[in-house]
Length: 162
Length: 157
Image (tube, each protein chain N blue to C red):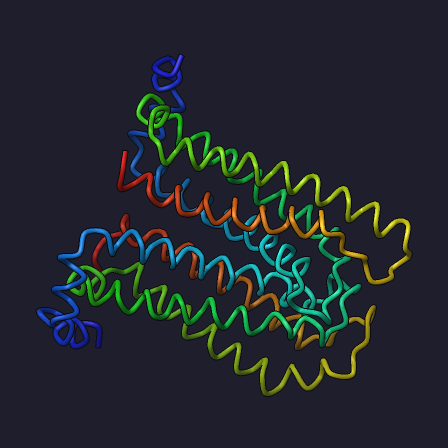
């Protein structure tokens, strides 16, 4: 699949523009880092509350952080696609990148589980209430996956091509 | 002194080991997400975002943010040691350190005033003073600056 996508990207106008614009890469990296800060910062608070910590927060009030988390994700999705377009030959065969994408996919499924199954359970919870076991599992899974995404992403320049 | 640091066993290990540098970078990004992520959420809350969210848990989260900072201080020092004399005159590196210094002074001050606020007003909604808002805005700017300068270390001298 990745080599198919790399073939589409390679030689395209976008690919050439990114490869030739020397200032673009660092700018995209800066945006990617700010995006990850918003994504992880918001999730730390949301997921810890889901896991039953920070009980001074009402379980529903942490939902207000979600737009910011989603904004961080969108920023990183856009810059991420541009990274891939800028250097498709390198990313498509990189094991760190492939692991990162699988982790993002699983984290996405976990977020859907949260949306459909866990979020309704949280609506009745007040400040100080403990959370159900399913919420705890989803919260810890989310944090583990996203920190895994962070590690796999950071190691892309250093790991081999699989 | 910088060349002495560069020639310590640990600095040579960071520079020469196949695993040390990427492993330290991995720690550094985990610490970054933790410390900047938590402080950014707290600053945005102080500035009026997330009206339903209570500010008080951020007093507790400060400890986690400090753990992130500690991870980055240690991993950062080790990363620095392998290229000390180069980094000591690098403009982006020095800008990054200045931003972090300002941000951590602000973080300590904000934490202190939040603690006082919540000790005096039992679990109530905190009164956010203009001064606290200004400090939070400055903190956000300082962390943003630290991220920009940090990334640029790899690109400009």
